[in-house]
Length: 116
Length: 114
Image (cartoon, rainbow over all chains, first blue to last red; front, top):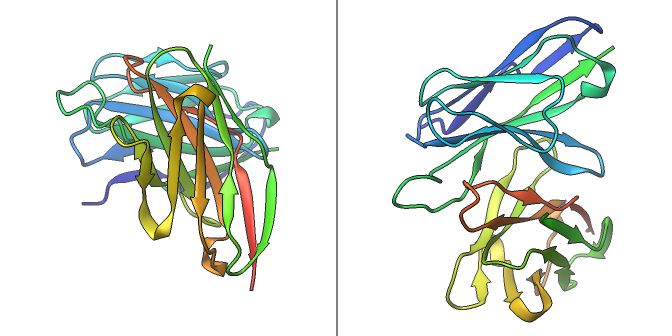
């Protein structure tokens, strides 16, 4: 099992450009999450999807959109990138919402995004 | 609203020293508690977790943490650190019934000198 995979690993954008970060998990998890990690700020939740077909805002959703394409895939889109969105983005998944309810989140390797 | 506080931003220790990293949370209800570790250039990995039962939980690589409900704390400990423990450590809290959302602390960077 690959676990949680993310593409791309690195990306440089100019202000105003758009892009989509891809995330996929092969653990049959119901819930998926997008975080951003900034120095000294820890991880902050951008959006999450508790189950296929649902998405909800997290702590810092402004400037982002998400799509839960199917149970495996959860993408994050920046419509018009800004320098403030320079960050490392992590996708995660968990069994939350299933009878097992182990709640542990499994993280992908991250995407380092720079917006100039 | 829930919040997580990690008291130390950066801890520097020599090999074989003992480690304790503080974590306090604010939430009045039942919580699940986690410590994650991020080695340089890598993604987050789970060190240990507490859901219920024995408040002293043991994780991987010799780490343990104690949940003290009266103090809203979940401190991470290791009796003797190694150079390979150099990493950033994140405490995280999940309120029961919150759809599995984690609230992370800002992290503590641990540097272990050989």
